[in-house]
Amino acid sequence: MNATVFPSLVHDASAVPQAKNIELGKLIRTAYTLDDLEAIRKALVANKTLFLRRYSSGGHSAVTVVEGDDRTLEAAIDGLLMFHWDRDNIMQTLAELRLAEDPALNAGLNVPADAWRRGLMASLIHHKKREFRFMDIITDRASGLPHDYMRRPHIRYNPISLEEVGDPWGHGQNDSLSFVNFMTYYTLNTGRLSLSDSNTADLVNSFGAILHAFFWKVNVWQDRDLGAWEDCVGVHWSSVACALVSLREQLAYMERNGGSFVTVREGQELRVDTKGLRELIGKCEAKLRELGTNEFVEASGYVRTADLAQINPMLLAAFSGKPILDDANTVAVLESIERTLMSPIGVRRYLQDRWDGRINRDDLAPGEEAQWCHGSPQMSYIWGDLYQRTGDERYFEKQVFHFNRALASVSPRWLMPEAWIIDQQSRQWVPDANEPLAWAQSMLALSLVQMKASLSKRAASGR
Image (cartoon, rainbow, N blue to C red; front, side, top):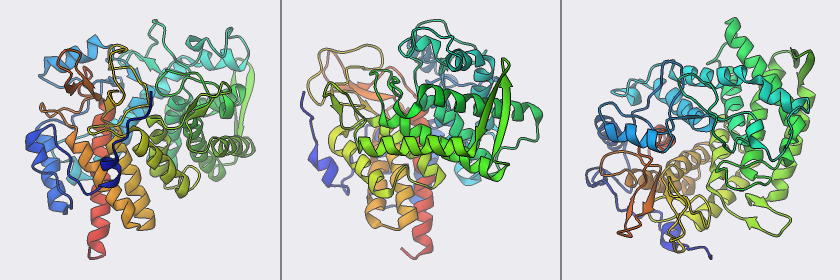
C-alpha cells in the first residue's frame, strides 16, 4: 500500500479545518488572542470535554468514565479500556500537573493539586508489588525471552487494585516504563516531588534502581520490544528515545544528589551511578542517530519511515526543555509524520494500520486507516516548545495549525475520541468506540496550556 498524502494539509497551515462539533467550530480562528482561547476553554469545561477521572487508588482507566454518561462506562468496559496503561496514565499526569498549577486554566475543571502525584504513585506502587518481573529478567530466571512478553514487567493492569490482569498481552514496552521513570525524576528535579516521606523514597529508589538494571540487562538501546502499539517486534526509535529522555532526567537528579546509590533485591546489589547512566544515554543516542528519522529498520529490508509513536518521546523532551537529539532532528521527524501520516481529521499511527479500536479491518483502502485524535494536540505542544525556545514564527504557525486540528476532531457529543474510523456500513467517518480517551483528552488540555504560553509570550513582545 502506498502512502496517501494530503498535500493541502501539509502546505496550507493557515486553513481552518472543518470541525466535527459545529458549536466548537465557531470558536476556531486562524489567529488567537488570549480572550479567544479562554472562550474555547470555557466551552470545553462546560461540556466536560476535559474531564479526567482518578480512582481512590490513584489509578485511571484508558477510557474516561464520565459521570452520568452510561455510554462512556460501556465503552471502557466493552473494549477492556477500563484498565490502566502506564503510558496513558503518565500522559494524564502531565496534563494534571500543568492544569493544577494554573488556576485560570483549571477553573471549572477543579483538577486536584495532588492528582498527578497520585497517578505517578499508582504506577510506582504496581511495579513495587511486581518487582519479581524485573528480577526474573535481571537474574535470568525468565524463560522464553525476549519473545515471551508476559514475563516482562506489566504495563497494563487493574486500575483499582493495581494488580496484574491475567489475560495475554504484549507487555514488552520499554517506552511505558520510561514514561514512569521520566515523570518520577522530572518532578524530583523541578521540586514538585520530595523524598522526605520514607514510603515515597522507597518507591522511587526501588524503581530507579531496578529499571536501570533492567535496561542494562535487555540492552535497551537495541532491545527488540513491541513498541507503543504492541504491533511489531523491532528496535523502535520511539522506545529508545523514551528511554533516553527519562535517563537524562535520572542522570540530572543523580548528579545533584551524590552520584550513586545501591539497593539490594533478593540478596543482589543493584547499583545506579552517573557513569552507568551516561553510558546508557550514549548508547541510546548512537542508536537514534543510526535510525535517523525512521521508527525502525529491519534486517529483512522492511522500514517504517514514520510512526505516530515518535511524538511520545518528543512530548517528554518538550517538558524537559531539551530536544531528544537536536531541534533539526525534532523538526525532521515531525515533518515526516505530517507528510506521511496526517489525514483530514487526525493522524494515522502508521501506514497499513488495520486496527479500528475494536478489531482489525481488512476492508480499508489506502488513506482509510484510523485517524487518531491525540496526534495533533500533542504535536501542537511540541511545536509550541520549539517556538518558545527559538522564537521561530514557522513553529508558532505549526502550533496553531495543530491546535485547530485538535479542536476540529472533538465529536458532536463534545467528547475526545481515540480516533475517527470508517464505518463498515455507511463508509463515513465516525468516532471509534473508545470515547473519550484519557490520552487524547490530556493532550487537548496540554495544547491549551501551550497555546496560552505562546500567546502570552507574543503579547509580552507586542505581537
